[in-house]
Image (cartoon, rainbow, N blue to C red; front, side, top):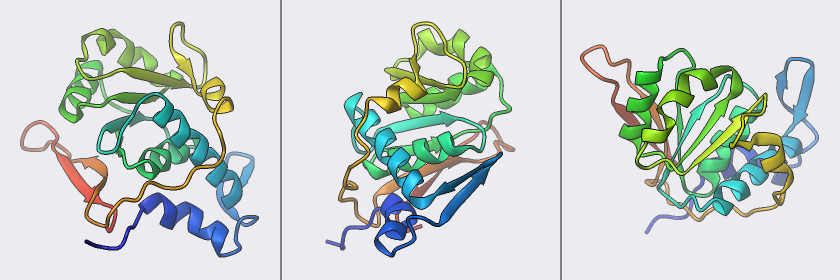
Length: 187
C-alpha cells in the first residue's frame, strides 16, 4: 500500500503548512486571493459536496469559466476523494447531456451564464442528484454563495492514494464522441 497522497493537499494545503498562507495564489479580475483564502473556499466546497452525499470516486462535472469558483469546486471535489470533471464552456445541450451521462456525475457545478445550455437536459439525467449554480440565482437550484456560506472552512483531505483517480479531462472527440482521459492523484 502506497503512502497517502491527495492532489488538493499538495496544490492547496501544502502552501499553508509551508508558511505561504498570506501569499497571493491567484489573481482574478480585481482580486488577489491568498493561499489561505483559496484553502478556505476549497474546504467549504469539499464540505458542501460531502454534505450533499458525494462520495469518493463519484464524479462532479464542472461547467465553469476560469474563476475562483472553478478552483474551489475542482480542488474541493478532489479533496474528498471524488473525481473532478472539468468541461468546456462552449458546448451545446446535447454535448452536456452526453458528458453528464458518460461521467455518471452525481453533482454538477455550473455558471449561470451557461445554465441555458444545461437546463433543458437536466430532468433526463439518471445519475445527477445535485445542481449548484454560480453567478445569478436559478429557481429550485442551490446557489453557490448560499451553499458555501453554510459550510465549515476546515476539513482534512481524504486519505487517497497516488493511484486513485483525481480528475478526468475530455479528449477532443476527433474520432467520435469525447472520451475521458483519467488522471490520478500522482499525475
